[in-house]
Amino acid sequence: MSSPYLKHILPFVLIIRPQQWVKNLFVFLPMFFGGMMTDGDCWQSAAWTFISFSLMASAVYCFNDVRDAEADRIHPSKRKRQVAAGNLSPMQALALMVILVLMSLAIATQLLPRRWMMVGAVMAGYFVLNIAYSVGLKRIAIVDVMIIAIGFVMRVVAGGLACGIPLSPWIVVMTFLLTLFLAFAKRRDDVVIRLDTGVITRRSTLSYTLPFLNQVLGLLAAVTLVGYILYTLSPEVVMRVGSPYVYITSIWVLAGMLRYMQTVIADNHGGNPERDLLRDPFLMTCVAGWLTTFAILLYA
Image (cartoon, rainbow, N blue to C red; front, side, top):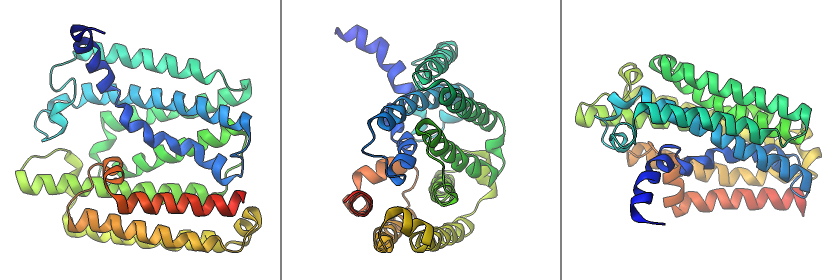
């Protein structure tokens, strides 16, 4: 592949942010907790849903980059985004958005007819919700982060529908609480940038202060942890997992949340949870340990 060709194709790859697709691994959670990891058909359905949701999320990124281009140009890191940097025109980004939406829905049709319609409805709702977020809802403090958390719940719902796995209230609540915690951590990073540089990256951050966000993060961390412990002690969960020792996994959750709180509040990092996870051996160990412990309890 020649260098000039790479130069022209690279902006289209960067704007869809494939590194962000790790968020869409949430579609596999119902399969994991439902004890269906050894089911080949479920794996196939979840994989198609993952690809489809990733393309739909990338379509949203294209719209966001066009909508936020002016604000991104004054952001210390977001100014490198393709529309803000002038590597792609708004029309090119919007055309790519349309192509991605159509590809997403086309790939979703690989699921069973009834499941494809339900999963497609969830993804269409995700797209509409995020367009509304980008157009105006992101300017409303608290509402902005709740929409982000709802987006992750929709990923879990799509994964459950794709595999035909009924979702328990626990997985919905825990997903919402955890992602709400991470979203507030990102808002704290925006406030830190505003205080350090005077740059207002998001209008909603004008309604946030560091003391408020520190308290919110502490509250959400506590509620999430208590909720998770109650989940592990639930008779329904103990019966479904087939082990009374589910509570052992709480150790990994506690260690991971404390470490991330340290990263966000003590080190003032929180703007990119995916990057922080991949660069922090402690956090990676907590996630790997939690997954391994849960997998042993579920499948051993």
